[in-house]
Amino acid sequence: MRVATFQQTPSPRGHGRTYEDDLRLAHVIADQVDSMTMSRFRAVDLHVETKPDQTPVSDADRGAEEFIRAQLARARTRDAIVGEEFGEEAGSGSRRWIIDPIDGTKNFVRGVPVWATLIALAEGDEVVMGLVSAPALGRRWWAAKGSGAWTGKSIAAATRMRVSGVSSLDDASFAYSSLDGWEERDKLNGFLDLTRECWRTRGYGDFWSYMLVAEGAADIAAEPELELYDMAALVPIVVEAGGRFTSLDGSDGPWGGNALATNGLLHDKALVYLG
Image 1 (cartoon, rainbow, N blue to C red):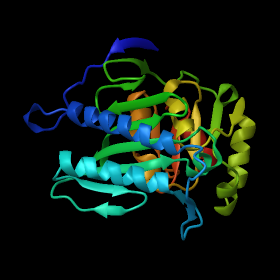
Image 2 (spheres, rainbow, N blue to C red; image 1 turned 90 degrees about the horizontal axis):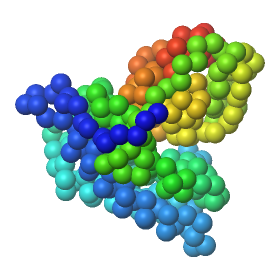
Image 3 (cartoon, rainbow, N blue to C red; image 1 turned 90 degrees about the vertical axis):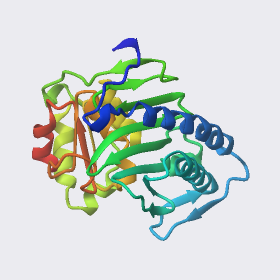
Image 4 (tube, rainbow, N blue to C red; image 1 turned 180 degrees about the vertical axis):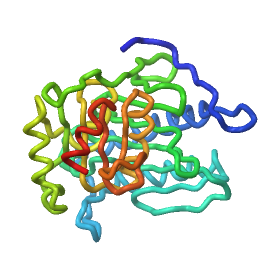
């Protein structure tokens, strides 16, 4: 990895327009949301409820998403917005912002610092920009189509990320979330077989597994059940770092309800076990 000043490469969209303004907007919003969520992290008066799907939601989740939606509604009036807590607001064009105010809510409510705000922009069926901000870890990652993947404290000067060059499962580090989902989907045997083939396995979970793949610190990350807002921001970061992000059937992108991210060299090998 190297340190460099961020420069945006023009996208193939018409009129020479790039995603630089969208990325800068995401950073500005994330800066403000980080302050909001950190003020509620480990707060003694944090209010937590259980949603119909039996997952927790806190007042911090809802407050952060409301803030992001309000900022986007003012700055990108024609764009649709999709979020975990409040569903979809239609837009007048092909662009959709896809947001998860706190990815890792179970960690958040228990005081574990592994959680992040995810902000993504999709045009049609392609996610063209993604930002992941984990303020309790003091980390942020981002990418826009054609510009590479970056990590750092600001957009002005950051470290460019590249996936690893590991090409053998014997040398691979495999990051996952939990065992339950694999068992529920009758894929536990394949999952366990893959863990036995890999050099190392660790249950980092949620967004962090995929950011480690983008950084080259891990080589494979996978989860058997995810929502669009869990994955969208991760896709361009992994891809722009040189990796692959697909569903477990090998389809590119975050549209399949589950995820496999690798350094690219190991993707087909991992699909043999998980697909």
